Image 1: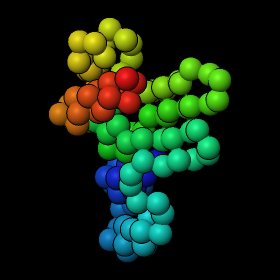
Image 2: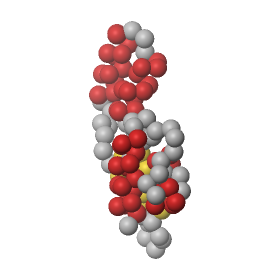
Image 3: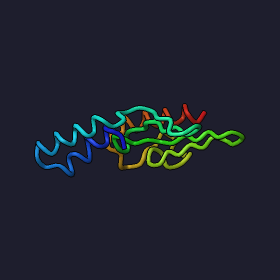
Image 4: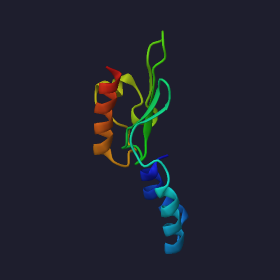
Length: 108
């Protein structure tokens, strides 16, 4: 979960007072903000927002192996990817389509 997910979704659900929300924002400000993250050698999380504000996909590139791309809820099948088709539940359908294009680029 990145700060977009935290501030747009979690904050609204959990914190009712302005004081609680302000404290939460100070905590979130100290976290990794946004962007792609190499979490280990050959393992990269990259932003694919749309399904949720802070959605990430995972690319694993290990020596002597084919790359593996885990898209989670960004795209459900190769056919969906080929047709630029997203599921019915995405918070931001426009961002979802941009994420599909990014996934295609990374998969090439």
